[in-house]
Image 1: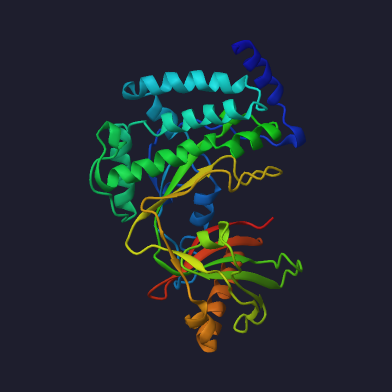
Image 2 (image 1 turned 180 degrees about the vertical axis):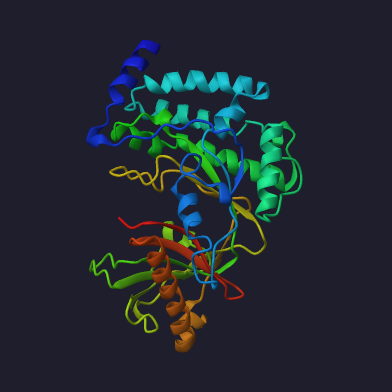
Length: 364
């Protein structure tokens, strides 16, 4: 019962290896535009991008960004409209705290129930108003329709956006996330989820870069991988190889291809949409691999299409390839120089040739 949960929680609050999640509280804002991003209210995904704003050469673009800060979910849950869901989640949290995780079926069922309950939450008027203001400040397109779950009056693109936001909040209760917290001796309820809201770049190519070559640990060498379409084909579990290259920081205009691509499929977004990224206080903790545990959800799902790399100029046109890889390598160099430490960088090149950095974090 509850007593067991309390004692277990107590035992878990002294983490192995001294990793601690810094518990957050609501700072009074339901949604903010990028100039207001601070460590108090958003995670490192939002802050790392904000640190780059205004400090990079003009040809390196950053997506417009608004965020729902830490604890926004908790405040929305306190609304009388969400009272039955709050009661259900309180009961489920107590059950989770005293649960034997060895009973896999019961564990998975409980977490699935919690995620489903979160997806039924309705937004408050304050949240909707502050989101509209933050989106307007960032010139982010506001989705038409009504924000909220379709089962409770939401409709149009706004209902899809709300489903993505509540999906990010619900991913706090992903099985791997809960298990990782317990394994690290962290109190799972201390995890708070900010949500980073951005336009999706309709990518022709996507890239991942490491400003120190992870294979040779050479600090003078950038290592990168490139695919056609969106970055999920790189970071997700897609069969086949990406194009890989290395570039010496003293000779950025002459990147060397180390592997040609063999992926049969790519992901493509054909019309403007939004992505909602998890940005928790449990990511990028020293000694706890929190990155990748929580979900980022695109409002309109990208389309899977076959890719013929042999016909793509990235493979068939040596001069074009040289220009693209040199630009990507230069971007990596500029981001590392600005943040003054080795970086893992995700970005893309749009159909009109604009280069975007969409995420960066310290390379570990």
